[in-house]
Amino acid sequence: MLYVAVRAARRAGDLIARAYDERDDLKISQKSDRDYVTDVDQRAEDIIVREISHHYPEHGIVAEEMGKRLRPDADIQWYIDPLDGTTNFIHGYPHFAVSIAAWKNGKPLLAVVHDPIRDETFEARNGGGAFLNRRRLRVSPQKNLDHAMFASGMPAYQRDSIDVFQQRMDVCMRNMDAYRRGGSAALDLAYVAAGRLDVYWEAGLRSWDIAAGYLLVQEAGGLATALNGSTIDLEQGDILAANPSLHPSMIRLLDVTK
Image (cartoon, rainbow, N blue to C red; front, side, top):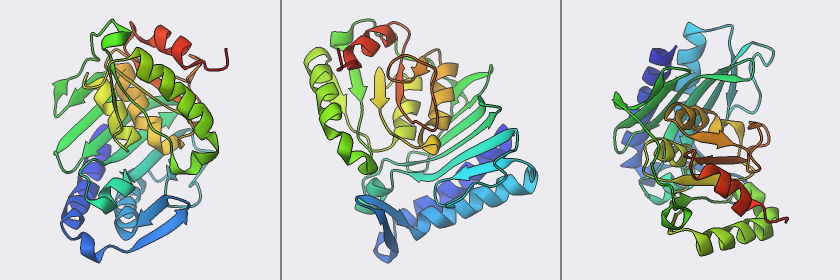
């Protein structure tokens, strides 16, 4: 299954990389306020869905651009974001990725996050570790919050939560070393797995944004939970990812209700 996911991600990534150099011909639609989709998103998703459905016609599929779930009662569900970071892609900002994950009965089985511009493929299998282009990944060893670099953001469709977001950002900026805003949740989580970021948190994401990155972090020795430390709920979409040393401190820091 992991081989199929990697192949699908890389095929979709090849399409995206070619289209990136021809963005003047992009067809762009607005799904909602500040939330965009291009014909490239849709064509990349078609590639992935066809590949998975060919090999596993009995599996369920949850994909960003489909508008409906396929076989929602199946034990195994695939979560697909064909182009995580569409706004970056539109603007020519080279930070976006293909994200694919398979979960069985609410537990992650495998994950792939592929960056077609850097040709980096992050992959993980439950119990089998996390890898970047076949090199084993480990989360950052950072133990001090005041030396930690974190990433976060707020989805375009969560503008009504800006006050809480700003409170959390304020305490993080006052207590941590540096902040990065990547614009791709899948890549931010992959970067935590790779030790490039110490912490990533965000609220109100979609299931396909985090389903792959969640497993990458776990398999690289990190912790990924809801913001309050509870078990992650893909449908709620809140996530806090960090190494085991920083994770408890981040739960306390992000609790702006206290």
